[in-house]
Structure formats: C-alpha cells, structure tokens
Image 1 (cartoon, helix red, strand yellow):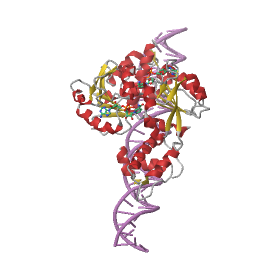
Image 2 (cartoon, rainbow over the protein chains, first blue to last red):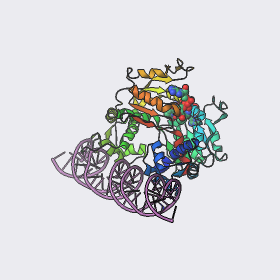
Image 3 (tube, rainbow over the protein chains, first blue to last red):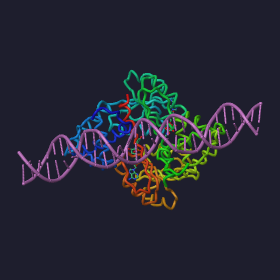
Image 4 (cartoon, protein in one colour):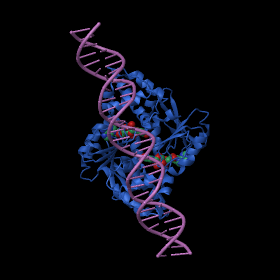
Length: 204
Length: 204
DNA sequence: TAGTGTTTGTGCTCACATTCACAAATCCAA
DNA sequence: TTGGATTTGTGAATGTGAGCACAAACACTA
Ligand SMILES: NC(=O)c1ccc[n+]([C@@H]2O[C@H](COP(=O)([O-])OP(=O)(O)OC[C@H]3O[C@@H](n4cnc5c(N)ncnc54)[C@H](O)[C@@H]3O)[C@@H](O)[C@H]2O)c1
Ligand SMILES: NC(=O)c1ccc[n+]([C@@H]2O[C@H](COP(=O)([O-])OP(=O)(O)OC[C@H]3O[C@@H](n4cnc5c(N)ncnc54)[C@H](O)[C@@H]3O)[C@@H](O)[C@H]2O)c1
C-alpha cells in the first residue's frame, strides 16, 4: 500500500486487535481470518484488513493472518514490544484500584512508581510499591519513565500535568474530568466516566 | 433548523457542555457565547453552535446562550432533569472507588444499589449502601433502576449483562475490557483503560 | 428611530472514516 | 498440474462529521 496518513481511529483500534490476538494465541489457534477477528470484535472484515494494511501486508491470501507474528508486529508498531514503565499520580480511591489492576500488563505496562501529595500517605505501601512525595516526579526523567496516569482531583490536574511535562513525560492518561493543555509533542488521552454515563439516559 | 439526524458525536459532547455550563453557572456568569464556551472546552465555536442548534435555538444573537436555561435544556434532552438511579455491579477494587466517587452527581446520577457475588462481601457496607447478592438484580425492575455500571471481571461480564437486560436495564457502563452483546434497545458504553493507555507509546 | 457592534443559526464545502467490490494470491485436492 | 475455494490488499464509492462564511437577529446607544 502506497504511503497514506494513518487514521487516528486505526491507531485507536490497534490495542483492540492486540488484545484479541493475544486471546486467540492462548487458545492455540495459529491463524485467523479478518472475518473471524471481525466477529469477535464486532467490526466489519474490511475494516480490519484496511487497518492492518496501513502497516504492511501481514496476512496470507486464502489463509488469514498468522496470530503470533501479527500480534508481535502490532506490539512493534505501538512500541509495546519493549516493557513500558508508567507513573501513577494520586493514590486515592481510583489510584489504589489502578495500582492493584493487573490488566495493564497485557500491553506490557508496568506501574513503576506511585506519587501523592498527602503526607499521611507518603511512605505507605501500595502493593509492592512505596508511595513517593509528588516532588519526586522531577526524577522521572532519570528513571526512564515517560508515561503517567493522572488520578488526582481536577483542580490539581493541570498544574500536575505541567510538572509532568517538565519532567519529560510524553504521554498522559488523564482520569480527571477536565481538559489538559500540553505541548503538541505530548499526547493526552482522557477518560471521563461520569460523561460516559451521562449519555445513557438519552438512549433509553 | 429543518430535521436532521442528530450525530452520535453531538450526543457524546452534550454532557461536556452541561458540565462546563454548570461550572460557569457557579461562577455567576449569566450568559456565555459559543466563543467563550469553545475556549474552555478546546473546541471551535461553530461546533458548539451546530450541536446546540440540533435541539432548537437556545441562544440570543448578539448576546450568547443563557447559562442556566441552556443547562436545563441539555438536562432535559439527556433526560438528566430527573434523578437517575444506577446499580453498581462488582464491589471490588474499581467498584469500591466508583461507589465512593461523588462525581456522578453532577449529572444527577445516584448509585442506588451495589451487588457482588462474593459471599464474604454480601451485607458489608460500602459508604451508606449495603452490598447485595447478585441474585437480587432481578429486583431492579421493581426498584425503577434502569442503569448499571459493570465493574466485574470480563469473564463474568457477558453473563451478567444478559441478566441485567432481563431485569429491565436499559443502559450499561461497562468497565470490563470486553465487548458486550445486547439487544438493540439497550445502550452500552464501554471504557477500557488499558486500551486507552495502549496507544500512548505510539505517539511518543 | 437609525446605526453600530456582536453573536447566533445554517447551507455548503471539505476532510476523514467506513464499506464495498474485485483482482491477485495462496492453498489443497484430485 | 490444474481447478475450485478462500481470503487478502486496495482503489473507488459512500457515509459521517467538522469548519467556514455569511445573512439574520438582537442589544444598546445616541
Ligand atoms: N473514584 C472514582 O471512581 C473516579 C471515577 C471517575 C473519575 N475519577 C477522577 O479521578 C480522580 C481521582 O479520584 P479519586 O476518587 O481517587 O479521588 P481521591 O480524593 O480519593 O484521591 C485523590 C488523591 O490525589 C491526591 N492528590 C491531590 N492533589 C494532589 C497533587 N497536587 N499531587 C499529587 N497528589 C494529589 C490526594 O492526596 C488523594 O490521595 C479525580 O479527578 C476524579 O474525578 C474518579
Ligand atoms: N482496578 C482497576 O483499576 C481497573 C481498571 C480498568 C479496568 N478494570 C476492570 O474492571 C473490572 C473490575 O476490576 P477490579 O479491579 O475491581 O476487580 P476485582 O477483582 O477487585 O473486583 C471484581 C469484583 O467483582 C465481583 N464479581 C466477580 N464475578 C461476579 C459476578 N458474576 N457477579 C457479581 N460480582 C462478581 C468479585 O467478587 C469482586 O468483588 C474488571 O473487568 C477489570 O478488568 C479495573
């Protein structure tokens, strides 16, 4: 396929494919067709073929996609082939749940550090990690941590994001219900649970 | 504006507008222009005008939108003008955080019931609520609860969703990393945190 | 009451995303 | 080795949403 800009939507779906392929791999299946994969994910087969074809021709005509190597390709594309360290900011209700969540490891993520600004929490353990003072985020650069999960109140989120950016963070998963202003080189993905819930009554 | 199908994207943004208007209302501002609102939300002004115009002409030319009544209009559109009761399924790590989260009340949501299938948890308190046995979800219909937040392992999610649908649930906020199959009349919104995090390294 | 400045509501255009449709490639059985 | 059955990869068509530009509407002032 001659070069074309890769749609953001395609990128957004790649982790979905990776998760599905990891499952198929566990089930021992060697290859999977776009039709089978589409069925699992409730997408249309051409969508999957087009998405994958942006990155090259992984499949074999008449057969489908080799499960293991396609998964590995996606990991490489998404830079998940190397373990990714992330910092968790905020060891409150949500932060505690996230720190205990094993689901991030499917994609090779490791929550390598936890920060808070509550003196009562500093030094306490959260799983195998020790809660550090928020001022220690300045050390993220040296510790090769480039990702952060923000789980603090929205009033504090922007100031904290500024600080993370200064500390060399390149990607932020923001769980506070607010917009974050960051330099273009930094990528922010926000999740607003209340807003997601907010649309449901409309459809009832 | 002559009738046109309302884009899903417009609906998705409505809670955003409502949250922003609630804030502006608290600040005491009486009216707000699409330009001011767009600045807060980092959108373009015509986007906001077009979105709102799908539901009628709320604004006054030369002035802007009246903050209080526009917020009320949006509540009516989204059916958030009446308090909405929701059930929380799963009182684990994430469920506990959600049960304690006050942020849902901005949109008039109330987590009116909590369910789990772990005998050790049934009867325990979670905030002011008592954890009920999962079998009690069959009573949701009678209790006028039509919304559910699903915070249980993905292996159990589909079976539980089926049960919720049978109990008359019309909307589900799914936090498990899996696709849920439900009848067309039921709306599902899924949040997959690991997947959201999964795209970040690509952009670094 | 007329004039000025502002902001809405919306037709139109453009950009992006999804889906279709089919040729090209591969496997496998006879 | 050939023919039939699959399934990929992709140009073209279709669908969907975002943004522009401007007329229409309103407030306010003099
Ligand atoms: N709890 C939920 O289920 C839930 C759901 C959706 C969104 N959220 C959002 O997630 C964020 C955290 O929610 P929560 O329920 O965990 O709140 P929380 O109050 O339980 O925890 C917040 C934590 O952040 C720490 N903190 C505050 N300011 C800080 C700062 N400047 N630097 C470092 N740490 C700081 C606090 O000490 C506390 O430990 C909020 O923005 C909330 O809106 C939470
Ligand atoms: N913890 C997080 O931060 C986090 C982040 C993203 C996604 N999730 C997802 O949210 C879900 C819950 O995560 P968690 O960390 O709270 O897990 P958890 O194991 O702490 O809690 C799950 C709870 O669900 C209950 N449960 C299990 N099967 C049930 C059933 N059939 N009916 C009723 N209750 C049942 C369990 O008893 C337990 O209390 C999972 O799907 C997880 O992937 C969690």
